[in-house]
Image (tube, rainbow, N blue to C red; front, side, top):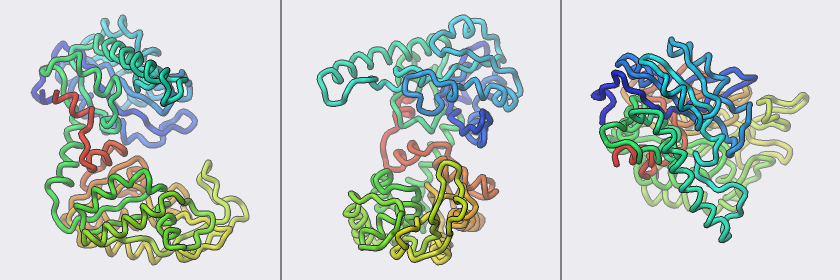
Length: 421
């Protein structure tokens, strides 16, 4: 069922959104995910329906953690929606509140992940043991009951959380079993996300340039290998720079490195050569002798200097792309017709280490202005374009990180498959 074709009049819709927004002292620091869900939520209300909104926040791992309560965002959601939002402090005990909902009214359920059944993972049992297998089987049954309870609140289910569409959780996939095909659908955001991914995968205009950043090669290897069969140029930046430098016996000081992935880095280089892909790596880095990752700041008295990425002094740590690297990245992006960016070039949260990511963002904006289709995905990349004021200068900003990567890797997303089943 397409959401635009559904008659919501007098119906209760339970909508899975991704309201896993960053908070500081209880205040939202980036509302991109809430803004992304608004078109779907408002459409349902405008069509005469009532809303039951469900989401997770953080990783409470099946425990109640007040600092991860969705109660903290009720006022913000009410303000954005333009209507009061009621809150239920237990997502499994909302029968009375759901039954009382009238058209135009909104209910927000507490963090789904306060219950281990949402993710469906056994808690407190060691993997690989007979006890784990039994606990896993029992958990799957409990997960079905958890999903059935959520489904009982509503007449239809709308999946609009692309950020969790790659997980077969109770609210993102299992719940679909309790609605027939005419009463389950993708939300407007999900439709847009799926279309944007399709543009990158199946409607490639060349040259196709992908930029992969972030700290670890291991977390991106699947997508990197898949992209090497599709792109014309691949820029690898961020912390990955130092694993590649170390693979060639470079000196990287205190920089992040995956010593067990050096052969993987060399394999990526070989694969790029074999596929005729131009692999672009940073050659210099802005480094620091004392960076506080908890406050995103340079410690008092610490030095900030630029060195070749493969010749960093022992006391320094690489934290951003240097000026030569920034120029290389910008030149590689220039003239592109399809662009994918996931992961920053450095610790962009701190002004001293912002230039690398800014250079990439500005080059993408310029290419987009010249006709390229640009897809930005992943929380940090989205935060970058927002910080640099470039959000309206790129083609599409995805709200999903892992989901986007798995979709581009060619994997079937459970949250999409459940709607189509």
